[in-house]
Length: 441
Image (cartoon, rainbow, N blue to C red; front, side):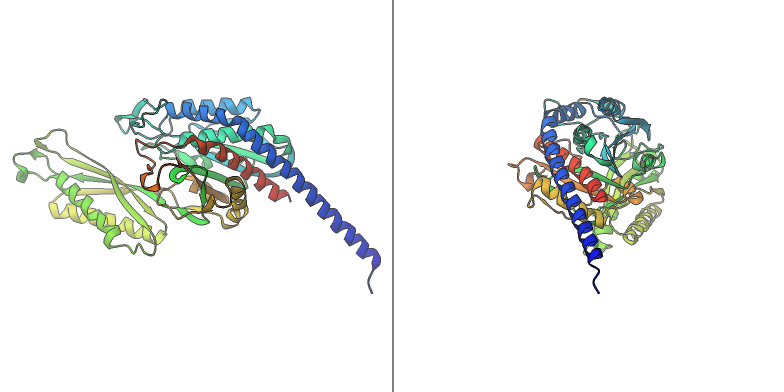
């Protein structure tokens, strides 16, 4: 027999639950509208921050000015601040007005040893030292935008903190491009110094700007999105002699040149790239001091990009075999060093499914799409090994520039359309709130 009393109680309970959910949805709809308004209000300031940071870039583990700018701003918002994390990193903690989980938003701060050639009125003229050389410094990878975007998101979220169900951590990370030789740094060091603890982070979100997409668009992908990356260094020891008598020595320049050429066959002839992409690139070849002296040593340095651990292991072995074989055939000695590098940037499947609708709500259904894998790499991947992570790209190419004319990151001519900043601030703010909302509902 049916128990009418129990049915009535169940119905009342269900109605109460539905009512509470509807009420919560209305509250979060109002919060979303407020976030959009606050994003527009801070837009000009975000552009000003970005130009200031762009004009004053700093190399990895040397982001002192940038860190102070960030820390001072976070403190002005009433956010708890911890500095000198992994040398120059800054961690801010914004505690919302309601109980809930903890989500982290991350931006990288370092520039590159590149002489800027954009001709922008706020172009960098900074110089510094990199691996013993005097170099120009430029935000050639867009990290100036990332910092300004996260400062903007911190501003927006601080203004609505009473409505936030949980805590937002702002992680401003140094040395994403790789710490100087002989130093620790980057995401790995921030993790070791408890950037994800006190309070413990439940999920982390990051972004990257490029000209791969036009302004007003975003791209994301579940699972492997960006490649793993390792640096390799090859030291070739020959025998110095007069340039007019090459037969009386062992030329490390010729050995190095043969190694560079032979390394290109790894990807073109020895790896099935129809199964998984891979890259082996030499970015530095250094040797000699004078035109008529065959030097004693030559140094090569490059990068390896893969998406598969087995392929990575194969490539490491092939680099060693080729370098040692070529050197041995010429009577030279060779030392190959391959660092551990960074793992694949792997977007958690459940978190990606959870947050993709927010990206589409901000950018529009047609403007936020699943993107192809990229052989670029990100040490954001270390955070993703600790907690579920979601990483996405934002377009920075002007609408009137065709894709074939896109300027790649790390180019001295790299620039972005600043129209990309406002929707990115909006997206980061909404992603944080929507993640915390979903954890509560």
